[in-house]
Length: 119
Image (cartoon, rainbow, N blue to C red; front, side, top):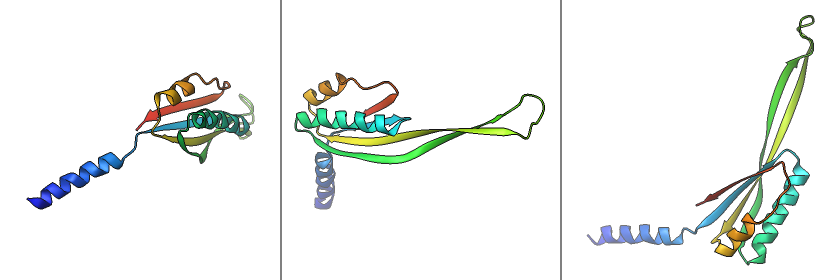
């Protein structure tokens, strides 16, 4: 019986150790634009003394498209295009309401996509 209580307390202790975090995934086609946006996000979080982890560069996704050069004749002649999607991951540990408000009011350039998850 004492072992069961010890197991329950360790689960509660683990839950208490788990910190609330804000996980921000930022993606864009241009890496320079992406890095500037990430710098703005980190600066806004640092203004309110939030603990920031990142930016962590994730693998670049490449979408390739193959297109016929001509419509009817020379079907073996093809052209390839690719789009590169660069992504960065930022974790903000124990975010306060001020940090979240500052991030929502942040103006970022067009072409930068942001996914925010609270974990």
